[in-house]
Image (cartoon, rainbow, N blue to C red; front, side, top):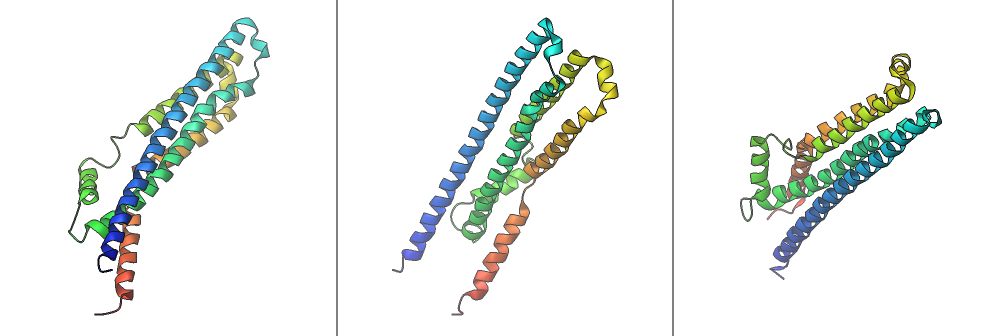
Length: 205
């Protein structure tokens, strides 16, 4: 049984990397579905709006213009979900770094990855949040254009309350983007604390 602990460590190492791959795949899937759903929704709503505007604009209610904000809402929720996946990935990655790589033996992927992120300025090169921001801005622009088409330019100058929802979505999107770009170093510090506690609990000798 002398080799059992080492075998358990190898199995744990493999399972952690498998879980990381699962979360990475889920991140890509969520992003793809969100993008396709946003484009589909915008296309359908715009086609209906312009058709109605050309035939009978009076049938269009202001509330219906808010449907154009659907992709913006979806973008915020998508980035929030991606953030939760990334946090799970970081949690497992830092675990591997602290308990498997820092002793100086075996792979050094996560240690070198931290150095790479430092030089590459974190996750700024990831296009996902930029694309979601683009969907958000397009959604806002079409929302404003639809209001102007339905009720005229003077409608916006009198009804500033319609900007409340876009403003709240923008604030939440900024919050999620900042979370996305963070390196989540508190997770690594927590694993170090747990590692220290484990060493202290081990019997001497």
